[in-house]
Length: 178
Image 1 (cartoon, rainbow, N blue to C red):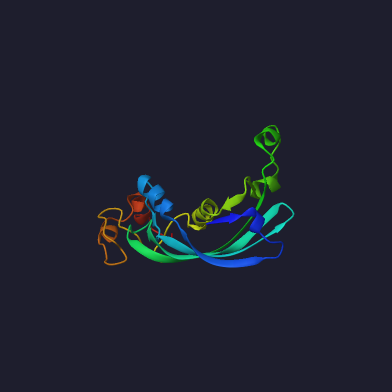
Image 2 (image 1 turned 120 degrees about the horizontal axis):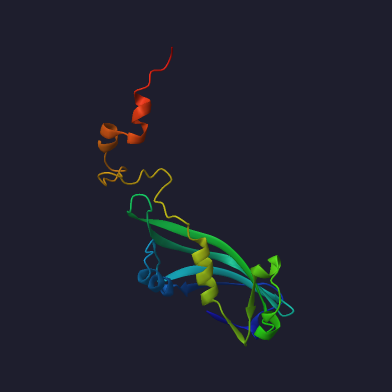
């Protein structure tokens, strides 16, 4: 979605729209990291306004995503309901920023130039930031057996009970007490 800078009011304006994120499916399908799948679009609630030349955006992104569990390698679905906010300031130009030292506060800023703001890359960025670092189907996921590969969430494995951890074999032979 694109918003003309001249149409951004001084008082907050709220809109609800559907944003296409098919670009994310292309990026994730071409990489070796195929942990997530995205719907054709996500619902975006957006509130935006301006203060002089600075533009303020806040809202929520909602949708159903799919993930591949990092423990058991099974696909699962999860809901994304992520609040966001960002500020865009006029681009001072590359020449002005080239020799300037970055400060901590500058890292939260983004720049804009031109007559309109394309929200798509900004929303895609917010979605990527909202994704879990390691996708898990659940906190209690037991994963796969390291020996035989059976999914421990669905069936028991006798590998661990038969062999145990060989690094601990010496301690199992020790007698406790005097």
